[in-house]
Image (cartoon, rainbow, N blue to C red; front, side, top):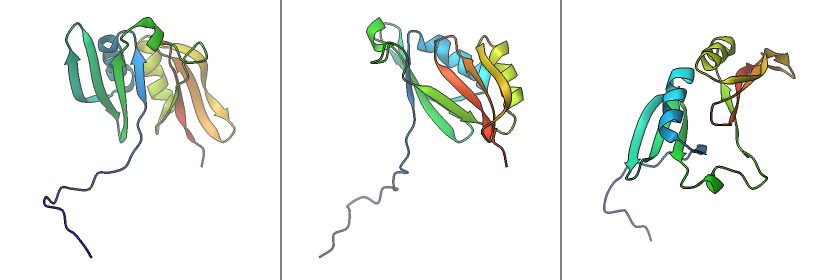
Length: 135
């Protein structure tokens, strides 16, 4: 026995994307656009000043939203439980762009453990490792 759907909707591509909750999503979105050349692909402004946005850096997508209260910004272990790994062809260039846009250097781009990688902390307290595996 087979059944066919009434509508032939396109198949949904299965994926997973991080969702970053920050105190000020509007400022965060502007930072990610400037620092990482992110492209905003979705924006929902919430009455009262909140924001939900979907951003893309190349094929990589992630979400950013405003925290409803200070408690939602903190992770369950007292700090952020998210660290992003942004894989790019030229980590030195994007690292410099991020620090010029206001990110704090945690460690500079270098080669270790099979990667060319550096880490920054964005103005919202989230850590981003920027690099690529060495071939």
